[in-house]
Amino acid sequence: MRVKCVLCDKVETIDSYSLTAKKLRKRRMLTYMCHQCNERIKKRTFERKKTGRFYLFREQKKHKHL
Ligand SMILES: [Zn+2]
Image 1 (spheres, rainbow, N blue to C red):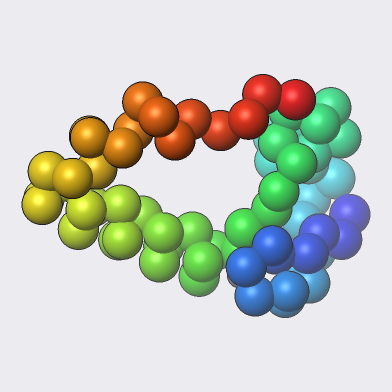
Image 2: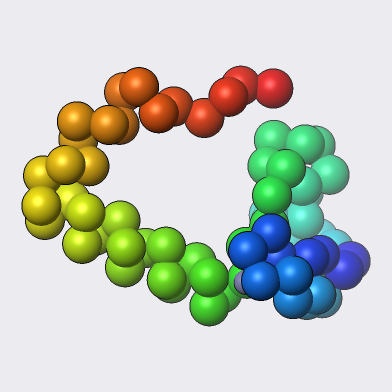
């Protein structure tokens, strides 16, 4: 199946039977992020964790449950 990255609009083809595809289909995961964006986010989260600010905002900034 084809999925579009929410961050860079890159369209990628993923295995329709993969866990990611299943999650997307069941709408447990409404957004798809390509590998590059994923890595970027991970890195950013890590940097924020180092500063300690990440934990302050974590509880308030929970994702909206759908
Ligand atoms: Zn992307």
